[in-house]
Each structure stands twice: as C-alpha cells, then as structure tokens.
Amino acid sequence: MGMASARSRARLVERLRALGIDDERVLDAINRVPRHEFVDEAMTSRAYDDTALPIGYGQTISQPYIVGEMTRLLIGEGVPEQVLEIGTGSGYQAAVLAEIVPTVYSVERVEPLYEQARRRFARLGYRNIRVRLAREDVLGLPDYGPFEAILVTAGAESLPTGLLEQLAEGGRMIVPVGASGDQRLIVVRRENDTFVRETLDAVSFVPLIHESQDVR
Image (cartoon, rainbow, N blue to C red; front, side, top):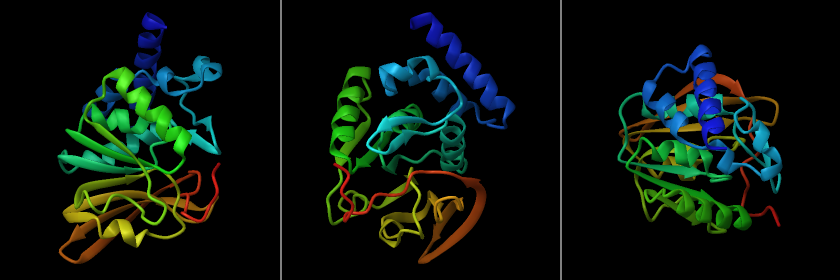
C-alpha cells in the first residue's frame, strides 16, 4: 500500500481543498495520516474515499471532509496545548489532531474499539495520544481538565453540560447536536461563565453513547 496510499492521500487532500478545507496545517495532517490503517481490511480499497465507513459496533470512521472541517474549526483561533476528544472510534480523528496538537486525550466507551485504537496508536508511533476507556458514570475526563478544546465525534441530543464544565476559560468545543436526521455542527466558546454558541452546517453522526446503553 506504500506508494499507492501516498498517492491516494494526495488525491484526497486535493479533493478536500476543492471542497473548501483551506487550512494547510489540516491538509498536511490528513496527508500524513495513513487512513487505510484505521479501517477494516475489507474496506482498505475505500480508505481514501471521502465517505464515512463502518468500523463495527454500530460506529463509523468519519468522512475525511468532516474530520478536516472539525479540525479546522478547532485550531482556527490558535492551536491548543491539549484537546479532549469524545469518541475515539477507529482513532483516525485523534491521529489527525495529534499531527497538530501537542497532546490529545481521547475517550472511548466501546471497549473493543478502545483496545484496537490503543494498539493502533502504539503501532503507528502516536505517543502524544492518551486514550482512555470511558467510565460508566462520567462523560469526558473531568479529572484531567479543564481543556482548551473539546471535540465530540458523536451526535448529542442537546449540548452536554458535563463537557461544558470541562472547558477552560477561552476554550472552544465542537459538537454535533440534534436528533438523528436533524443534526447541526455547533461551536461553543467559553467566555468567563458564559457559553457562546454558533450553529453551523448540517451533519450526520452516530448517536453519542450514554452510560445506560449496552454496546456489547
């Protein structure tokens, strides 16, 4: 896959640039991350298509355009020292972030996906990603915060207040919000004790898994 994947990544980057992803830091990161390493072997031929792909357990690896757009929004006002990602999934979004951000904390609730991602990060040499298995009664990592930036890679029915509390002063959170079929990407900025909300494009994400859901 070596040279073939490099050419495929280059074509993907040009496709994303044409779609409006214009932050070269983001495009360079996507160009460096081997997306074929984050999909099932049966999906390798589609790894560099600009589409979401299934990864099992009712979860998906996000469309590269969405990964690029969320990353662009996250770093648009400055690169944070550390980011909290909710929903590790395959680990692809965390890897793209880790190419730009010094430290990425990523939380996954589906234990087999957590184990796969942990091994994948180690194999690919991502030493600045700290992946954690989610606690049943807690959303996020309150003991590690506050975070300058939080990125949620699953759709929440409403703004998750538990995560707002983990956002540092001046920080920002990117989160898809809304019922399935009616989700919008939301950017939340913390200004003192006020949370300023900006609603952006329509998106489609798998639901945010709550502690009461059985995912096994």
